[in-house]
Figure 1 (cartoon, rainbow, N blue to C red):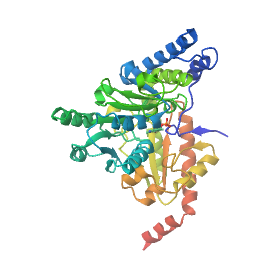
Figure 2 (cartoon, rainbow, N blue to C red):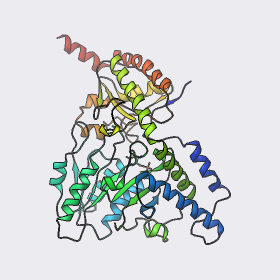
Figure 3 (cartoon, helix red, strand yellow):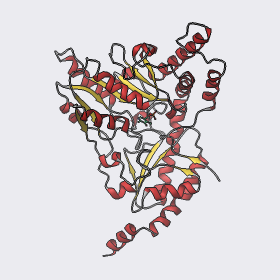
Length: 411
Ligand SMILES: *Cc1c(COP(=O)(O)O)cnc(C)c1O
């Protein structure tokens, strides 16, 4: 049976070049980078090379890259690390309803600890209102965290503009304490260009396993002059920002993955948009009652900067049936997709992202996320286009919701 992987926003396969770069660091290059001898120095050299590769991906300086255990830890270090630094204004945090659970559940926890949280709403495309953001900032606001690209829908937030608003407010303020600005760029990396200077952010999270690197390694970009406290205490690693012996094979893998992402970004972006658009155009031609969730798709010929979404992600609602049933039927023929976020799959709770976009329960329950990757071929997409309409009509025949809908239409 064919196996077609269309769930790259959950995780990506490790690129063979990445694995090759890592292997020596499991074998002969096993030193601890804190050691003075040659074993330690080799490991350290590899680690510093990786820092350069990652810094190039986001236009940062190597001193601004802090290695962590992944996107979740980076998101935690960004928020908890700035709150405890003593340099943030007060006890107010602003974030968005559609963030990843690494941010949302952290915010819920901090709320229990006495912080005040503003969860900004989004419009039907999943985008926040800059006016609302501006109005929610107070003298107490310590940190604002808004993701660059959403993992479920691919929606992009206006990060540069948010950064400008924050800079203007801080420039006009007498207080020496700061409003920190963090973005979770885990899904954006490798898919769209990222430039920390243009984005006006202080802190930015990345994870290797979403860019064809290994799991369990990520970075937090910490802009020069931005003071954070560690959340894991121990040795003086990572300039006192994250203790613990570094995950050298992981670090080497992430560096290589970042290098490949820089090299292939433009061509992959175009290829992904081409396949994504074909998938949507054909499915919407052959299947009735389906809806695209998130911002509109631009043709492949349009510049990628015109799009307010990622090139690889489409979230589609198939009305009157459940996304879970479609997912299981696709799985039976070897096609891997997802419903909602990876965390909520297995339960029938509607996705918090689609709910925040005020997509009603019927459309939300019937939603599927297709997230394409660099190795998907046009033949694979054609296979999905051929198979899916049959699955949908079979499921609709069995669906009481669809029966009811047809009855109502007749009356
Ligand atoms: C996957 C993901 C994370 C978590 O990263 P891990 O490395 O798996 O901890 C955080 N934010 C977003 C948007 C993600 O997609």
